Length: 422
Ligand code: ATP
Ligand code: MG
Image (cartoon, rainbow, N blue to C red):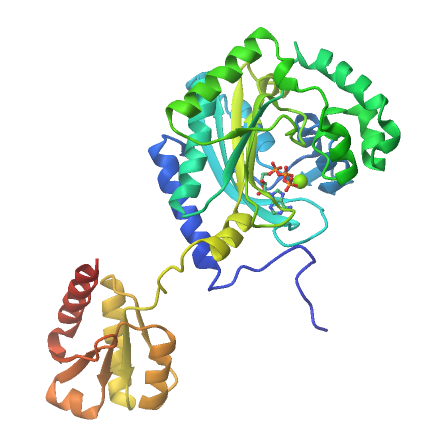
């Protein structure tokens, strides 16, 4: 029987994985400069954690979670809930009142797989716990924007405020009245959710619903004084840091925990999967999960979508071939090649060799396929004379190497060539 991967679960093969490494390396480097520490969290959590944090009526909790029903555990659909659970469980906010944490790893949602939408997908998730400052909101968005720019990606930032428990209920009632008049024109999903969560209708992708809500009341005009001041300060911060953004009064996130600032990084290049990253404030959530009364804000970037964008938008990265191929022709030379390869590898050089007794011709072909910058050919006559030729594959220049100190000489030549190319 021919067993394949599950639908929506994907292998990341060499050739693509280099883009993942580029994204993750750039992120780790940037997050460190912004003073974030890494936290690694389990994949499996109590189902209750997500039901309470994300909200019972959300698509994620209602339809998308991978849960082991009898054990009442769930494979995490996102990282924020787990990260807060860990912060509370280990008293992190007692040790340090503001925590700046990031985590990178797989998430699981049972959705219909499409380009940029998988059932196992990967996020880079960043959270600041314990600060209510609007400067943190601006700083986080600026960090996200810097990361995308450093990868050469062009993505826009959209911003909204969802208000707080003081101002949202009155807005919700106004919106409900607005939607009641238009109920018949809404899609079935929106007919259902306008009763339970009318804000979600604002975010519906259905063209019919979109047409109905164009003149819906805006939460941005209905904020209480504190939320309005906060929202303005966030925008002032973004302006000061020269981060471009646009206001989107329709943006509502599909998780119940958000308050005030919400934002998305959007692209026009991935069809319906327009959001490469999203996040916002969740000022009541830590307390709601049994922790101290502490505000929080965070966002997550989807790595699959970043990689798709890199394949589409960014300039080709130079192929990362090996530095040296050691070709041994015949039994004794092959044994010598085996030892020299190991010596060079432990010395920091990226080296490949042949273990199959291939002909010189097919070893040269292999070296080409591996993108070798240099090739060293060892035959019986080279071993006898103690000298071999090192060929620079780009320039075709050759130089004679003395075999007794080949490792040190080759290493020096490769390093000198690499630095002269910089
Ligand atoms: P979407 O509107 O595309 O469903 P979302 O609002 O559900 O996204 P979040 O829960 O905010 O997404 O997750 C943040 C990011 O994680 C998204 O912007 C996206 O890049 C990525 N993401 C979310 N779900 C998936 C998925 N099923 N497959 C791949 N990436 C995903
Ligand atoms: Mg979704």
